[in-house]
Image (cartoon, rainbow, N blue to C red; front, side, top):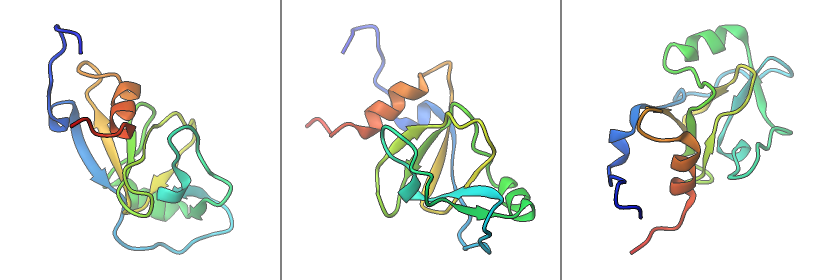
Length: 123
């Protein structure tokens, strides 16, 4: 590790960590994508089996958190411990098993944080 880098805890480089709603909405055939852990991969999005929610559910869930480009999604259920930087250019929401990490980009590059979270621990 370069000498000029600081070792810090996760809480020092994020402003918030918020998961999705803790209840299942009514799914639709089309609408706003509603992502779960199974839709998030280290190197790609698996959106072919994404669920969809209504505009009203999206608005309700967005009171809790709105995933945005540059956030890091971190799975905490199903496929636990997969991190991916949001680069999707459309609105979506996440279920309870996905945490949205709001990055302080003046302290860390989102892609670096995702790489660190996806790396095996060094003991």
